[in-house]
Length: 496
Image 1 (spheres, rainbow, N blue to C red):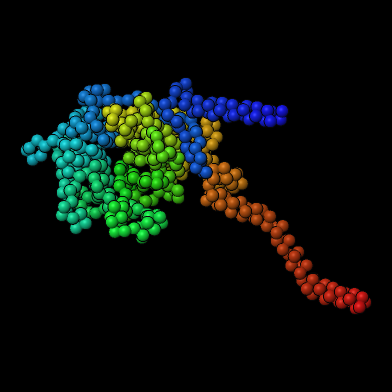
Image 2: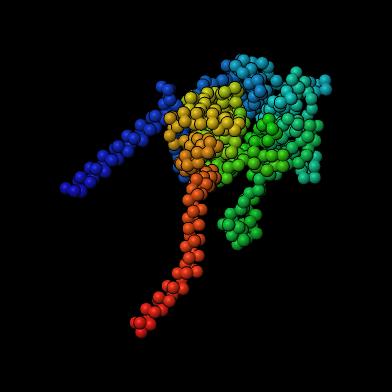
């Protein structure tokens, strides 16, 4: 009888667990009455998945037919300028399509006047509009980078770089291009593993930046030690990894994505020395949980990055169609997107950028651009992060409190509120927030300040206690100690 009741109790518990999970998922996939075609989630301190409200929702699609330039063919890149105009590398059609922020056709660039001769593009796979108003095209099929001015006239062609580090047989095949405020040109080239190629404003090759050294595991070292010469020849070469996407912010920092077989760090913010300066210790970039087989098998493959306002950046995962967004310290803010055929999902996502408040994702196989707009939840997070980036922790708290009303598990919100308490001298409340937000660094700061605060408030009592202890010690050492010894000695004599 007891066994039957126990089995019944377990069955009821299982049903309730399924219902709770189902209701949670349904709640995630619906926002403000609109169905969301993908899961939205984040990872907590313990690296467990926490489902969240949708930060961004699908907001339509744009195709070549919509723009009025005819169907795209295998497009590989897109870029936007400060005004929100969009530049699309329509690779299969050998052209660059330019639209205004509303995706009305501005022009189609199929070539340019090259010293009196009409010169066409061949398989352009990268495009970038610099802050100086010049357009740069990674014209991959012709092994060159083409720079055009605002009137689409040729400025220069960067091709066939010469250097001792490249070798005489090196073939320059640019895939992606970006330019900083000093007109330095950064190029990701095919089969180039030494790093991102850098050129000066005249197009002369300067060298590489951001070289990533691959770490060899102990097992690989052990295996190579006991392998034969033939086996070592067949083994994979341990060469630096490959970059996949690139962007430059207004301060000249180069944001780049790269292939990471371990799926741990695929996004970097490189200073002029080529060093990664993202502050986060655990620089997570991509999904932590993945299976060995099936649709979402293998680690994330990050292919592009979009630099946004206030240090926020988003990276694009082609393996799962996910978009991961981080703040300037590398803290994960939200994840959305997925693979599929519904609006808002992708088959072959290749590029990401922003236009105004919207995110744009280029899907090469479907030959269209997916648009995404922020929900109230996403707007609040972006605003709070922006205020925090500007150092206005007090105003950021208002946004963080609203975020917690929508998602009580958002750890960064507790950290933001804790920093406001810390600035206001409310150290005990700050400690509580940092503990919930799992921020050990700031918890330690708040704890030290709280400890000093307690010591200061009780300094009179502490000094009085120390003075009393000192007096007692003097009385003991000068008077009582000898008398106690004498008394103990007399007692022992009497007993003897």
